Image 1 (cartoon, rainbow, N blue to C red):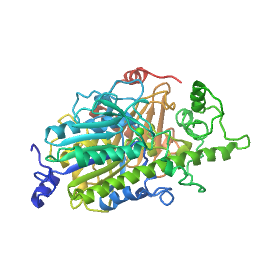
Image 2 (image 1 turned 30 degrees about the vertical axis):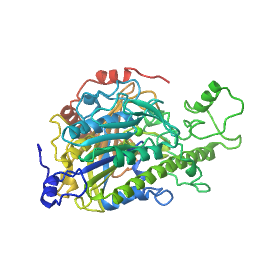
Image 3 (image 1 turned 180 degrees about the vertical axis):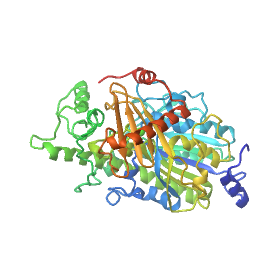
Image 4 (image 1 turned 90 degrees about the vertical axis):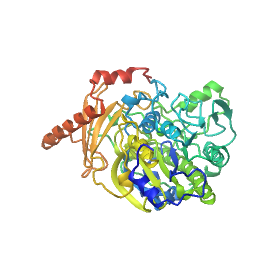
Length: 518
Ligand code: CA
């Protein structure tokens, strides 16, 4: 073993070798659970506005028995890029996966944490959502959603099962749960410790719940976020220009509206997409204005939360399996999502922006007896830190060029108020989908400074203490000039440190490559 973390040292010191096969030298099993677009404020352990109406008891159990991070952030808030950053521990400009649309497939020749674990004697698998276009490398077994732009389908999805395409019957979340349990029980090499990436496609758009949950919230009115009626004053050219509003950009398909009878297949496909570009749609002539906006929100949020109910159920199945098979004590479980999401916040659905709700990821970790139960931790951690942390917990040194750093000392309660004192962020995809201007920025404990640069030149400054909802861009305030100068210096330093100190024109080139227009 190349490197002994403090966690591993503790394990070896206290180890009674587990009766479960595969536990050598106290090496833990690892189950990395990730869903797609599950915002932390839709998990009841995070105390959001849905905690009483749409609880997540099984994810909450992980938090009760482990540690919940309230300031975990992604470095590029969109599916594929966040996944690539997690696997490699590097920013998009180094791992090469910048965008879902128009970019290159993930280069599977580069180093990833599953590859390192596999080399170090772990048996590894990925089951569920992958979304990186190239076939997974570093896994003894993979079974991932394919077709529909690598999104797969909620119903009767096609999986790539170790190189063979297989259409499965049923609901994707439950199937992914079945396949994960099947691998754990029947397919893995039980002579080795294991690392399983268990990744749900839910609750990604178009938010199709399981049939048994289609009417889960019938007759209820879900609460509205504080910023539901944001008018984007002081942010007209950025937040004000998106195509992701609840009011104007949900489609017939998103809203599960009933199509007119007798449409041809082509006409039906066209009808389903209506709403995407801001076309006016309503279920009736009389439902208009604010009542229509609220109706759309209720439809959207109920389906989104109902999809999450199935995710939580399947995590419950996994926890029960681990308990019954004696694996709980020796298995580290992580629950996270590839990024956050707007749940009507700022009047939106979707993600992409460096604003809080899509920047923040849920992150909960349980390791019985090693990580003290029931802790909430406010340290800032990033998705590029996951790989080195996981490797550290397995007692393996991370690749020397990795950009993230292990937060094992934080998990062990040994420190540290300042694991990270700032976040660097960079988003590239534009204009499809949702017309969000490319931007980079810095977030400190208190302030956020963002530069939107593609075909605008807009800086935004937020004081998260006095304006936690980020409603007022105070960049132009006279009394903020000194602060802006300091933040710009710090931002430039981070860009240099991470190797992203290139010209704006070079950044725009990434966006232009394979650009998809509306
Ligand atoms: Ca996603």
